[in-house]
Length: 350
Image (tube, rainbow, N blue to C red; front, side):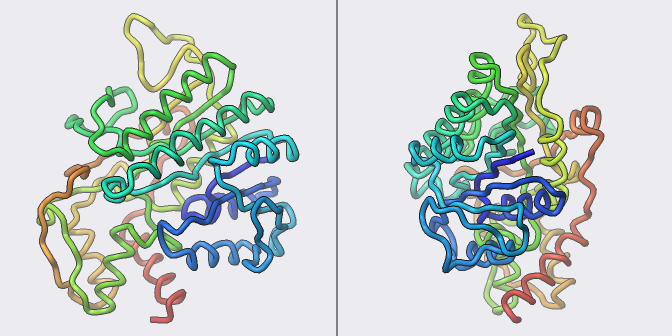
């Protein structure tokens, strides 16, 4: 199987590309390597995958020195001609779209980047799948789509029409766009709602990275909503395993789907939505205590009110993932945080 993975200089895409390359799949990875956060970390991820920075030029394929079945191309999803040429040249069997403008808080500062990457960029992927015969598409959605929902655990069967950040709105839009293309053009599409992904090689804008960095530098950490928050923290290896199972088991029509009582998580066409979460929320205070214990240091806390666009709690119902793909994320935060800190100390030499 020849698989396109978008966003392979990013956190999740990097791990997924390495996993599938090790498993023997033919992988093509793309990324625009933007400067939303430290590009040095993005190039370091690529180097870890055998892609040398000096060889990277826009739209030029680079073969990995580590995996002879992995090719990287620097490409922006907004570049429709470039995306179409890529699909034409490689002839993919499946596509996993992980490239996106991420981050809830950043969407308050730079909203246009979310429309460019998450809406227009995703449209180019859908159109390329349509015109070049790629029926197996999976894509990253987000737990952020649950927005103002209070009923927990969050189920894919719940209505998600009340997002509270532009980032969440673009992810909800992706789900609607995906269903439309599945209906119109017969694409088999699965959306994956990730819940607070963390682990080695993680993003610098995420809480774990910022907390560890500041504690080690003896700087205060920003704790929003005065610490009264819960997150369903999900370890990167668990996320990747869920994605792999989805790629190997593309969406099917729900034969029992009822238009008079529609299930938002499925359809009469080959469209499916899954949560991928740890199914075990952890309070922010407990999360910080685990970090402190692993570092052997106490955090200086800068207690702040809730930021616009944030939610107090997330909690994933993963019953569909268990029933249909026989999988449940399982890594406890103590193990995941330990693994991240070991990587952080090694990578930054602290």
